[in-house]
Structure formats: structure tokens, C-alpha cells
Length: 268
Image 1 (cartoon, rainbow, N blue to C red):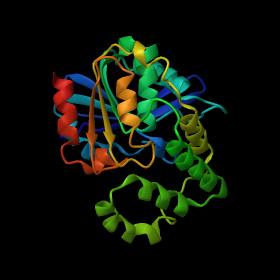
Image 2 (cartoon, rainbow, N blue to C red):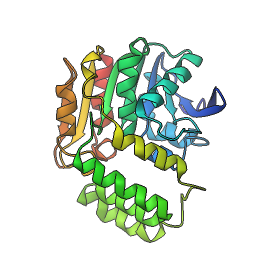
Image 3 (tube, rainbow, N blue to C red):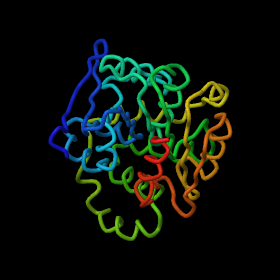
């Protein structure tokens, strides 16, 4: 199934955008990951991502995109959507199904608002419409940790805010090693994306989204807040909303039926 998994790159002006593609389906599915992309792009991750998202590989040719390499100071989620649209056009991806997770969901909102011809159906997972105290506290704290170069604290706090207590019993065993692996050469790209997160506010324009939309949230989300999904869905006409009670920001990883739920929606 994964023999055709490959790494790719799209040139966007003087910068570039890494992506991974895999799957044998006739339709295109674009996946936009969260803020962790600021620490490590998808470059070289073809096999790992094909395995992680294997549920989609039969129905789709899947494209997992990073944000572009060089993000200007003050870059917004809307500008990231402009970059994403340019990359999709360069690859001939029109009328694709799009799923954005966390910050990827913020970018996906503007992709559907400003470039509706590129989006057939939209899934917004564990993301928000506009700023709230929960996301401000979480992301501002991460920016401080990144500025100090405290990678272990950044990874530990992210895990503590993302996973359920059941999952944390397992992941806490790995905490002593978090400062030793995955440290980027610099945190500038992460900080640029994090600042875009805390400034994201699409609330006044979400009514312009016309494509069928599914919003998925976690009832215990400690990063974007437990009410974020309901607020977002309420601003997109005709959208559906599903909340995983008892799960948080990592609901897309922890919920055993997450991929099945998404596929049912996309297949309608």
C-alpha cells in the first residue's frame, strides 16, 4: 500500500514547501498539521506519515503539507492559506477534500474562505475560530519556552495539555528523554507559527464558507478550549459538530473511530 509514498517539494517564490504524498485513491485529500510543524517539517517522513494516515490511502491520494520554509515576521494564518493555495495549484489539486488539525485547521478556514474553488469538503479538528484565554495561555507559554531554548519543557507541557490522563500514564514514562530528541536547530519558525496562532481570528468571515464542513473537538481540550469546536461550528452555516467528551486536543490520535468518522463524512 505504501510503496508509492514519496517526499515532495513545491517552490513558492524564493522559499519552498515540503509535502508527502501517498495512497492510490482517485480523489485528493489535503492534510494540514498543527503547530508541531514549526519544530519539524514533513521532509523525509513519507513512510511514517503513510502509516499514520493509512486509513485514507485506499480512498484517496493523500497530501500532507508543511508550511513553507521561510515565514516572514508577522505572518498570519491567512497568509499561510495563500501559500497553501499556491502549492495546491502548482500540483493540480483543485476541489480537494481538506482536513486541518489545530493550527492546520486555522489555515484551512482561510483556504475555504478565500479559495473556495480548491476545497470540496472541509474537516476542522481541534481548532478554533478566534482567540480565547485558553489558547493565549498555552501558546504564549510555549513561545517563552522556545525563546529560552527549553525543549524538554516545551514538549512536556504540550503533552500534558494534549492527552487524556489515561494516555499520559504511558507517555510520562518518556518525559526524561524529551529534551534529548527532536530538538530543532532553531525556534524561529515555531515562534512565527505560534504567534500566528494567538492572532488567528476568522470569526467575522466564517459565514463565507460554503462547502460541507465537519467540526470535531475535544470536550476536555486544554489548548484551544472545550467550547472552541461548538463556537466554530456555530459560525459556519450548515456545518456539523462532534465533540469527543473525555478527550482533549489529541482526540484525533486517541479516539479509535476518528478516521472512520471523517471518512464517512467525506464519502457522503
